[in-house]
Amino acid sequence: METATREDNELLIGVHVRYSGTGSAGEVLALRSDDDGIWAKVDTTQLWYNSRYLELLDEKEYKKIKDRESKKKSNKFNEDADEKEVIKKKIDSVKQKLDGVDMSSELCDGGG
Image (cartoon, rainbow, N blue to C red; front, side):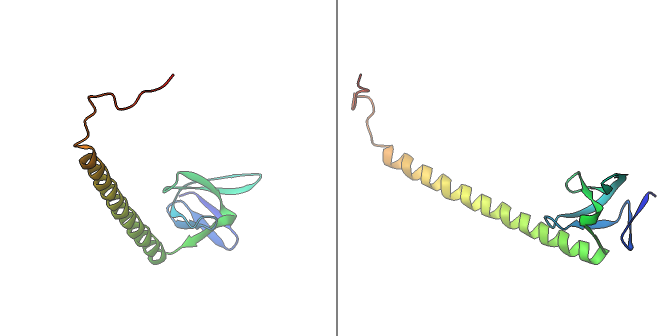
């Protein structure tokens, strides 16, 4: 297993981390280092993060974050579904209002 030392913590492939910039969390897939420091690739975003901005998480804390994100996604899905339903009802209402309009005669000219 590849390892890298970050301050007093050991960053390993497979550990859970949180990026302090956005709060996104995930599992470390790969590690690399260059002149700018140690970088970790995180599974949830598939992005490389400089280890100085990563916080190591224990399993319990990681599970809590994932559960919270899952609830947010579920709520967002329900809100989107509700919004689509409202839009559908508005469209149906406009269709009903226009149902009796006779478009066969020339009601208006385009001018010009």
